[in-house]
Amino acid sequence: MDIDTIRQLIEQGLPGARVAVRGDDGVHFEALVVSEAFDGKLPLARHRLVYATLGERMGGEIHALALRTLTPAEYAARGAEG
Image (cartoon, rainbow, N blue to C red; front, side, top):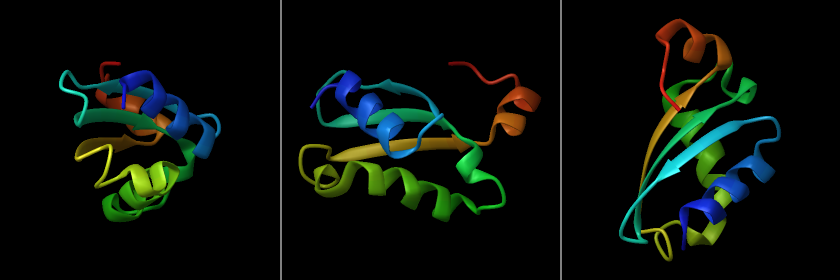
């Protein structure tokens, strides 16, 4: 699995999301996902939305995915990086 594929899967599953993925070993990844779909949701619900975009790849091709999930307003307020 590569970072571009993960980014594309998340973007397809969460239309309009801004996604940045990092990972050097092909099984452990970090992702920043900024989406309006997260508005009003707790962190666990946000993570479940992202995991749903990846389906069975989680725990298989993707051994670990550390997530940072923000709404666009949270992203702007924190001045978060890409």
